[in-house]
Length: 306
Image 1 (cartoon, helix red, strand yellow):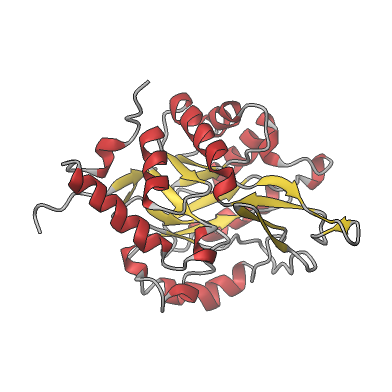
Image 2 (cartoon, rainbow, N blue to C red; image 1 turned 135 degrees about the vertical axis):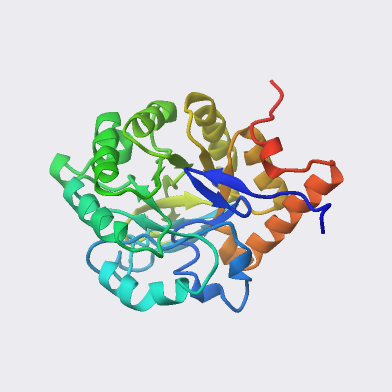
C-alpha cells in the first residue's frame, strides 16, 4: 500500500528496510528463530559473537534472573569462525536481510585476523566490533573502557576491512562520549550501545555468588534508562549513526531510543521473554508513524524536544 510509512534507515552505508535489528548473543545465528519470526522482515540480523577459535564460555551457572532483567556470564561461547562459515552462513545466505558479524578478540591481532577473514565473505554485510573484551596484552583491561585502546583496535579493524564497521561500546566507563569520539575518529561507520552493565548476585543461603563467574552482564528493562541516556549523549557527540541497545521490550521503548537520536535499535533480552518481540516492535513502530501521520521513520530520529 502506498500510504504505509517508509521504515528504511541508513546505518553506516547499509540501507536497512526498517530500524529493528537483533542484538548479538540473544538471537543465536538466526536459524534458531525461524519458526517463530519472519526473519526476512527484520532490519538486520546480528549473529552471536565470533572468535577465531571455538569458545566454550564460562562454567554454569551462568544466567540468573534479576528484578527487571537478567545477569549473564555466558563467556562469549561460540562455534568459532570456521564452523560459522561452514555451518551457519549457508542458511543466512538464503535470507534477504543484511547479516552482521559481531567479532571479539583478546588481542588487536585477533580482531584483525577475524576482520580480514570476514572481509572476504560476501554474505556478511558489516562487522560489529565488541570492544568490551579484556586486552590480555595490557593487563586484562577491556579495550572499550580505555579511549586509546578503543581507538587502536577500531583503527586496526578499519584497515583490515572495507565493510561497514560498527563499534559496540561498553557502558562501564566514566564518559561514553569520549570512547564514542575515539571510535568514530578511528574509522567506525556507526556505533552500537550499550553493551551490558557489570553486576552480580549473591545467594544468601549459601553466601556464595549465584554466577560461577561471580560477575556478569546486566541487561533488560533495568538498564534502559542508562542506555537511553548514553545513546542521547552519544548521538549529540558524534556524526555517525548510533544504534540503541538496552531494555527494549516494546514498540514504545524502541521509539524512545529513536526520538533520543538512535538511527536503529537492537532487541536483545526481550527475545528470551517473547521470541516474537522483534515483530511486535516493528509493527508498533509502523502503527505509531501511521497514527502520527509521519511518512518516514527517519523523520523521528533525534526529534527530542529540549
